[in-house]
Amino acid sequence: MNAKGYGSSGEIIAGAGLLMQLSEQVRIGIQLNQLNDLSEKNEFRYLIRTGFGYQISEVCSLTIELRKEAGKSVVVDGGWFYAFHPNLYGRLGYCPALSLFSFNIGYHNGPFRAEAGQSVHLTLGATWGLSFAYSIKRSE
Image (cartoon, rainbow, N blue to C red; front, side):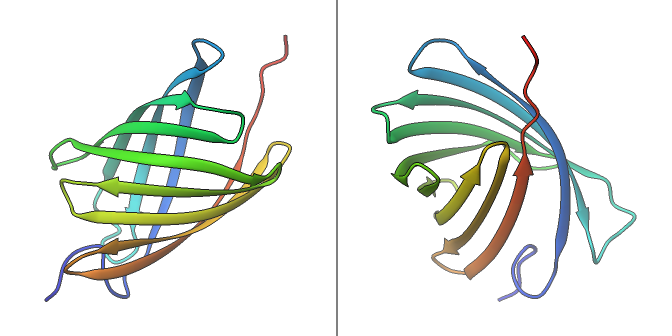
């Protein structure tokens, strides 16, 4: 079986987002990414993500996210975040529309964050990912 996004193809993603804290426990956010498929360089694709997060405790939170990629239907994801240590965290996620599970572990120090993860599709198999992020805070 062959499916786009699985196998030896690669992708570079550039994006920007906004995260707003509505209360002590509730956050919402939006992110826009431009996707560049390394095997199809002439194709412009985008991904819009918007989400809601609820902080259950100091170390645990739940999230719901809506994703819309160019030419595809809207997808709903759910996730769970847990901080093992002040700088080390784990995330679990599930996307029922795609039967896709995700497992991530990350490290953050100040504005810098690095995360490694794996997505597992019940039919197509596993895909690995690595991300790096730097947050710019507004001056008050």
